[in-house]
Image (cartoon, rainbow, N blue to C red):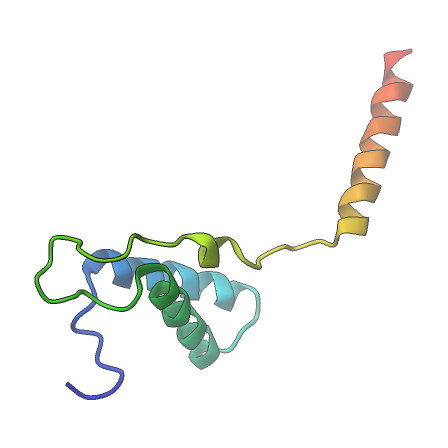
Length: 94
């Protein structure tokens, strides 16, 4: 099996890769880099492709890599927005 062959991945893993890749591309990452990052995330989650023997043996899935990143605004921006909302609600109570 040549390096980079994706035949051992399940349909679910391939769908996840596509979805993750689309997310990176929406944020302006190049196609090649988005694909590389997406497969890295799938590998980190599932520990590689399907294993011989099947049946889901081995380590369980680790979903923490899927939760990393993707934060569109900084802590300061979220805090500012929360304070603004609080001020608006307070003014509208009267």
